[in-house]
Image (cartoon, rainbow, N blue to C red; front, side):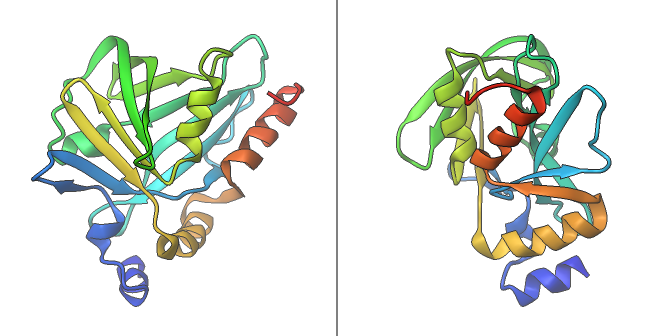
Length: 197
């Protein structure tokens, strides 16, 4: 059903999921531009907003990144990027635990460097007072290119992909909310009971 829906929109399943660009050695996924909350992602002490892609077989939703909003204001919210699907396609990332420096190009208009942490195949970047502007630029981007060491991955958005994914996320993942980045951050602040930043 998902494959048929994609074909009707003129999007091949392979264009809607993680794929390689051999000449650039960059691995890319088409993801939702919006953030989604789901019933399965509900937690007592934190709110989770995700961005999703489709698997190559167009039968599975893939969670590519999350914004984690803890209830406690003593804990920083953070952006998590999941590399499992990119690694499965051949991205040369060796899972490890330790500090990282992520270089992120934003919509082809400059780049930022974010200090973070790798825990196996997951990358964590805290939204601290020092990094808030850079993190927010990344989360608002239509195209994100991430480089960590020799690993290059990219996350693209496609307007044709958006409405279909809303339907799939509602039906398959129990989506409870859809947010652009500004609305998501406002919802997070409300959840944490804090001011404008």
